[in-house]
Image (cartoon, rainbow, N blue to C red; front, top):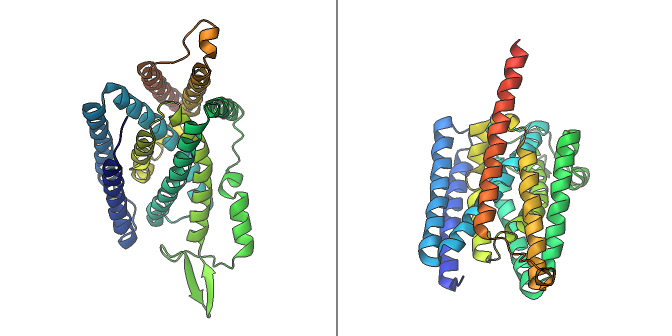
Length: 326
């Protein structure tokens, strides 16, 4: 897929303008969005992603469009899973409801920065070293197993998630105030500069986003090796995430099998990466098979897995609710 410098610059500029406008609005008027406001924003961002994918289809063909949609759906699903962590952070750090949207927006911008760095690094590594697919594939399979075992054991330590090592170090080193002062990260009291709890929230979200990028970037590189599609799919997956945080609310707790579905998707992509690496070194041909999995198959596996996961989760939540009423 040939993407000119002009197309790169226009795409980045347009997406940056959308994000900048969003940040400017949030900075002036931090608030809790209404259901209508959140629904309109999510619908608009999703429509933009679909239009972008159709544009890829028109200019580059169905293969690259399928790669974009597969990457976008995978990254969006991972982002929804990340909302569980955001909920824990917001709860444990007692972020006022009207300030949570600002904190989420800052966290999303940081996620874009970190993912941009990893996208560039991943593209450079893939271009020079085919064996990196073995590394990416093994890491995703390990992540899938860890995610499933975590679901089975229910051992998520909420306090540890919201108070990671970096955050504990920052709290220990920097003088701070115990109360929120709107969206300000620092204030001056008695002539001394102090950081506010909002600063700690940003640190917690940013450090968590860094860990999220370690999972998401290898996952999408298992679906497409086009940096342009990797970047755009990640950006569209993060757009509307903060509105989704407020819109679905309790629905997050009802998606009980989301981790299981994601573990299946990540394991599938991990195997796909390993097979692709074998194909690059002609190991599959020596064993008598073709290791390349068509993108249409990958997209079908992702869509079907996520659909089954969502339906099964909602059915189980409904059964549990009825059982609790008895």
